Length: 425
Image (cartoon, rainbow, N blue to C red; front, side, top):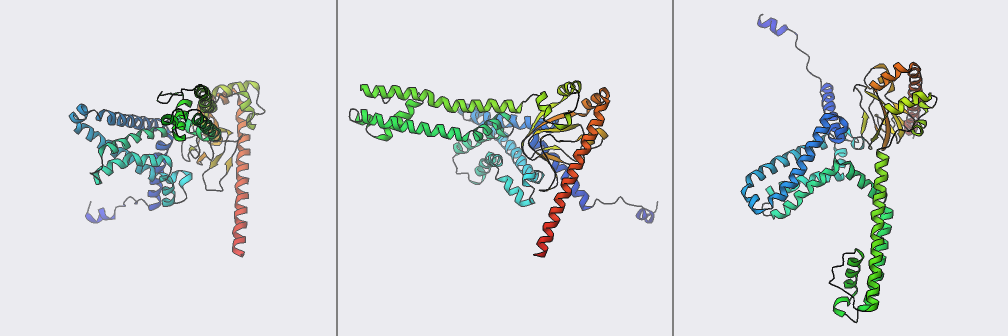
């Protein structure tokens, strides 16, 4: 072939900017799902989560073992290399989380503004604290290394991101904050009253021990916590009586917050691991007119699922492997503030599963949600066993689609009317 013919040969069309942006968006979305959903995103997310948990734990162990002079001095180079690798991994993770921030509906308001909001999230601040000491040691070599080692232990807080138990405990503390604040006030009141009583009873007898209120308050808090160091002991009869009453109050007062937290924690665990029951199915209209036999089969194959706020449930373009029924909370279709919202009793993903097509819309949790998931494999078995169920689901799915379309049309009309009114003004 001549040079002219080679030049005349058609060349593959170069990728356009929109195509490149679409590919970057797809990669960014996959990374976001892996890092934020963890094990919920599949095997890759599970491997990523386990790797980081092991790395965080290994860092805490390394900081502890390195403090032993014989080991720290003998393996200094090994500890230094491990620190460099760990900081590099944590830094890459931090940067990738910032890069994927627009995939989270909470931070999709703007490329820069949304990322700045995400950087102020408590988990992101913990991630920043985990890597800052390493860079501080480079730029500020005069800083005491013991202080930097202390800050390196803050990396343990990163496990809170991957531990459902820690996040559940934080949620319980937040939801029970009023009751816990009330018990704290009660403890402060009892402490003040008992300290004042001991000051009156023992202040003149033991002026060096109970001669002022701050010393008496120290004694009261130590006695209320049932620690009783024994460094401050009353010698009068009234003082001993006050000490006994204080110790009894302490047993009850400190049992209150423990009971509140334990009760809230167990309640939250039961709510997360809820079991599919007939009462739960009765809340979903699509199951209202089904036979008892069909309901019994559904109770076996349906899987309960809890989705945290703003996490995607299904993504557009993905293979439809399940349909989802909303038990509580709200789901929102991607598309901005006026996108369709699905509430309790509604479902999504049915059309895609019934027609064996990919999901056509990304739907995420608008609020914390409880879902029932019916996998495609289980649905095929059910439809073969109960042919009427397919027609029932198709009719219900059509009603949902018409409802969403009508809702979106109404929202567009409202938006158009507001735009027209703004133009007139």
